[in-house]
Image 1: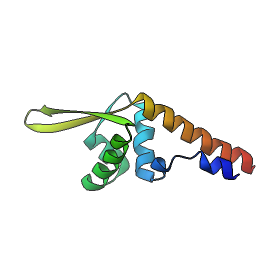
Image 2: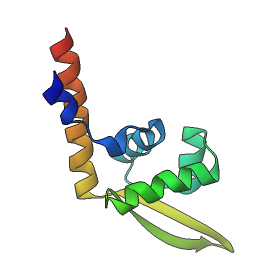
Image 3: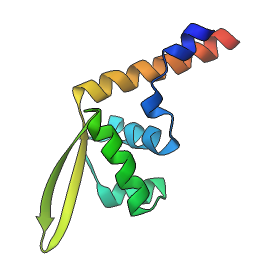
Image 4: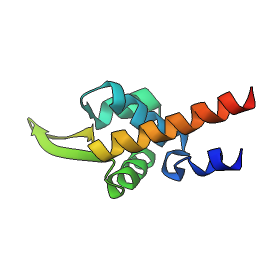
Length: 99
């Protein structure tokens, strides 16, 4: 059982980071406001979690302007996808071992 817990990625322990990564696994890209609405979090809270994931190179971002408004779009990286899949597999293994 202990080995299964060791395979979990601490970066994904937060409900918000788990939500960000889950959304990016099914969407090609998603902008800041859509993430904020989907996860029901504040700007500052979301920004800090996105920064943590970006620091790990689990997501990339592209900044642009829509008219005069800034728009930031996020995409999952290959590394982010791989690490998230490993995390989910570790969770699944924990569940299987517990039954």
